[in-house]
Image (tube, rainbow over all chains, first blue to last red; front, side, top):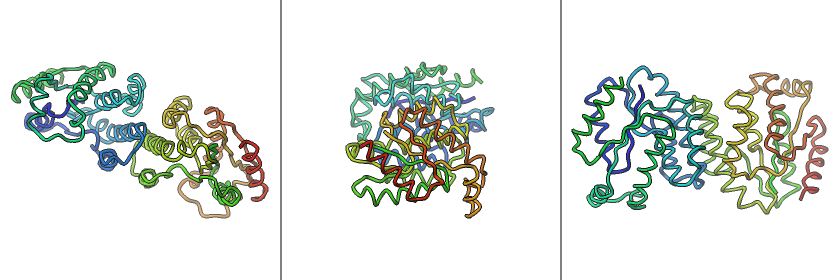
Length: 193
Length: 193
């Protein structure tokens, strides 16, 4: 079974994935972009801003996703796979950045993954108030500098993208305590296994 | 005006492009893949066989094409642009290698190029006999090792792809003398300018 954890910066995605590592020691943990050797190169090229064109960037993400699906997802599909991001992020970010319409993005991601989409997505959702508070507590990086409205639009798009991709979607209240969130996700995973 | 030269190995593409450089010194000469800085990196990643998945490879070619269109084609569209390969090769190779159906490939390439397709394509075509002779005269590289039938199917696909993309297509008899071919292409370019 293939599940993915999604959420905007400060939602606690990395913290939850670390907690899930303890609870599911036999699971395959992976990430997008950069979950394969060549994916690391692709990730660096994208994050270093080496591409000027937004479609070029989208196709690089799709190349990473196709390779990741082939090398990591398909060979381990009979195990539990827990991924830090997935096509759900791919569709969401590209939609908000007006790279393509959502329907085209869904088709492109189905092509890249050969229809091996996550079976379940857990989306850590923050309220505007909680997001504002968390951002005030840390230094802003490039994405966060675009502002709260941008992050909230990504958060909405994550949920809309998960639905558009037809993936079982679990929206988790990310303002709960770390342990409560971990327990909620773990119980949902165990119930689905 | 944007024109592209296409043809299988040994058809004389590089020779013709060198000859056209002398006849059109003010033209912008470029190539795919690898016509931009990042495109060189992408080209190396593909040619080194770093990607295992055929869709990943296709998306990398599309990323290169999107960036090349943005950085080289669009800014120079009022000049004469002569490109060594283009989306015509992209569609042809992927079709023969059964990566996608041709209709999908046309749509993907229209997306990558934002519909900035070549205005004219010159396809250097060899007869099976001439191809057999030329291959016998040189050492075979990886692609040529796949055999004459493969190269001929690529050649057919180049013509079919050019038509499917709706590009003005000029099929040139590549068994003619170098000078005759250059004159034929040059006259067609001058007539179209």
